Image 1 (cartoon, helix red, strand yellow):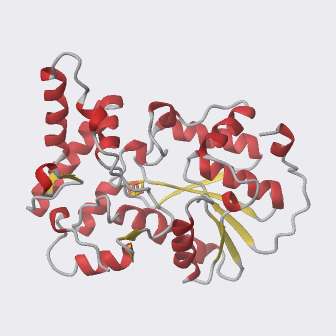
Image 2: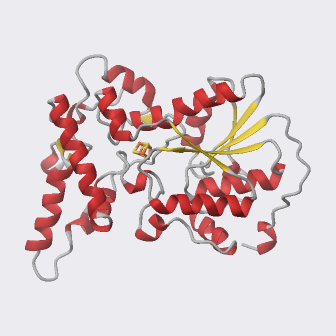
Image 3: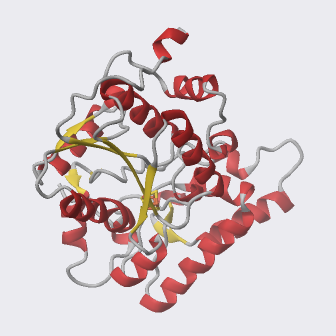
Length: 315
Ligand code: SF4
């Protein structure tokens, strides 16, 4: 990418009468979205909002500081006050790869309340860091935010169209490092790599990279199972063609046993795991088998607490 494409006219005259709110997640894509909004409209009327889930990676806060320095404006940091596990406990519902009450409560509903209270008399345009190669997620997010009459725009769908590796080059051209989770192999910088939608491969990566953090999640899951008295788990064991809840504890035992017992020259278990995670979609209501998550959640929580073993997409 030519460096002249990266130049940002921070003194550009703002044409904004609406408030322009960029939802910053702490990842590279949302940084690039924020950078493009500031480049196009200047700083006046632009707000960078970050909703903290209280289980973020430490290095995310360093990256937010860098964003503030590069863009010359504050990232407004806010929190609903709970972490995802506290939400699961309060909702009596364990998030999993298909339904994420954590992002519903800590990001979407929380931010909608904030938007209503801060801009009740003003038009608002929301900017999200979804990419041009994911039109389905873009359409879902658009539907989600437009239900409250917010205009929504996607700066990564503006030209020039870039790929994720370009975002890394861009932040390095500003002399800063991307959030460290990417270097460890995590696809996103959300919730410290411990996302309930992440799937087996990413949870194995968390176990290898941050064993203490993995153990903390394991304990939270055990605590919730005891509280709800249900055989529930974030992950699924699909060996033998059957789907069963697989606790983080059981998964860790499998990974540890593999380390002890693996034969000479054999691949490590975590190298053979399927990449069965879903994208976070924290700022939109992602779909489950074609249905909006909010609808799915509604229909699966009306009776007993949801058990991931019985998850069936609403079609
Ligand atoms: S990143 Fe994952 S765990 Fe964190 S709030 Fe979003 S869906 Fe929930």
